[in-house]
Length: 481
Image (cartoon, rainbow, N blue to C red; front, side, top):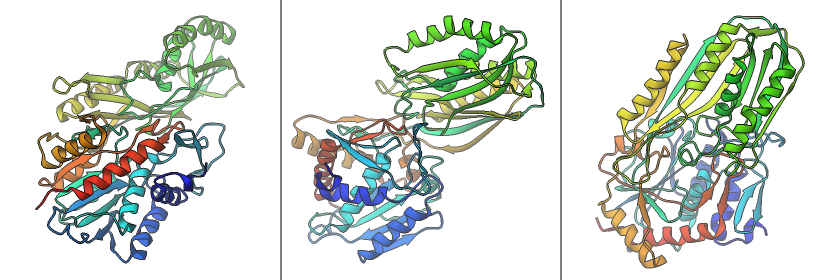
């Protein structure tokens, strides 16, 4: 089935147009130009602010002028992840899509449904001539996935809307009214290298599900960097174990699927046998029910001239073994909500240079600081440098707001069941926008998307139909001024 034949056709048409434009985070020049041209071709007031956010304004349809003005908001960038065996350049190629039953998928890469379905929905409202809505500002932000630069750069006074509809959640029966803040924690150090004293072994972890480091952090998925760290810890029993290189994970907001290390050990045969019969077997048994694709490969490799000293190797391995990963604290106030967490997202050791990238999240600022400080403490004990950056606030829930009550009522009447009014552990832009627009009522919702931030990402066709109908009803029933 072609995407052009799927209902609602207007959504999938715009999603296909959007996905033809390369849009990696921090490299959004082409998609900014695409959205700007889209708005101008409709004859609508279109501006690009100094940060790169695009704002398109559309007047209220007849009879809707007395309703509260709204902002519909989604982000233009997408997480760029691909399977190792896929040859794909996110900077030059459009996403290759296919239909599989009720799902739209990409061929070996992330789909960009996060947040492309939201962008396509706003485009569809802007170009429509038969959808009632009040005064509308469409806000397309940039760089949400790697720093929320667009939201952070949005200045007070640029928007006049009284209600913000953020279209960036991934369960169609949820209405989100709060989210976590986050902070980047970067651990680094440079080490001298010396001749390797043993035989080289290559350790590879692959085949994990990966996923969103906020929304999926509580699901028990394997983290390739943490699993690799467990195996390397066993190498410390070998008295001359030396690290040569590590390459694990990619983006801060993606749970690592793959990691590779090269080490030098005294007797590679004994080491491989011990790991295969010991820790490898244990790990595979632990994850058998949730990570059926997990593979751990340990084999002899070509020799390397340079490695870290045994002492420096030990420091790195102990830190990697000690860094907190996963849920740090569950919320005592909101049932089943992760309050704080950390994702050990990227580990790179190359020619003596070490970098470990983390994303710590929390809906409580003090708890977020506590997670980051724990990472700093263990790393500084090992003589490493630690930098905090990219901190952004959470979004405090307001369950009694008028827009939330209205959306609950519409959902219940339309679908004969109550929606789940929740706060989420992802980093939505609402918290940042709300800091500059404290009087604006905000809510987030969206269609069902699975596997966001991984090549398994897929968007539900039937859910997108449900989401589109819900969106049109919301626009037609925005409260009076």
